[in-house]
Image (cartoon, rainbow, N blue to C red; front, top):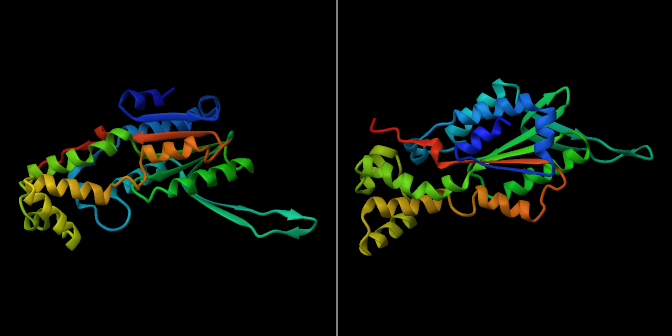
Length: 248
């Protein structure tokens, strides 16, 4: 299966509830499309640092690539009538749905939301599968190696840009740490850390902390059975998708 290519490249890949058999038999084309898109992901380290408001640029690029291949946003509306009485309808909006003659696949990207978003996604997949609206649900998130590498990524990026002060952060990355962040960084400096190490530690904890969407948090939901019995494909992006952009 084409997803083996991603696993060889360090992606976390997990199938649940016979998703492998279903995707292999009924959806080889969409799986190949998804593999090609994910294999091309490259996120400059400085882009992660600068961030900014709204959705991350890497997520925007991924969404556009999927949409161009027919994986488009869709709102499912479920209406039920019991004894001529129509119950309130339910609407489930999914960011990417790929329709084929054999059925539909639903996909959600969780790059850096609060981790309860996993519950929402998996419960939506469960409901839609129970109504035969989708055959498989897919979640793409930060993999274990990527989540564990952020501090080193930011430290290396800060070292390359010779970040040695709050003024350097503002000049190179347009970052203005909060008062709390400044105080914590200053405490680390007093304890003997150099500036870039103190900043990378605080920046990682605040922006990509344990309570955000990443592989381990997704695994916690799966272990509790959230989303069952919907067939699921879980994909975690590896640290290798982050590249050094070099000095601009």
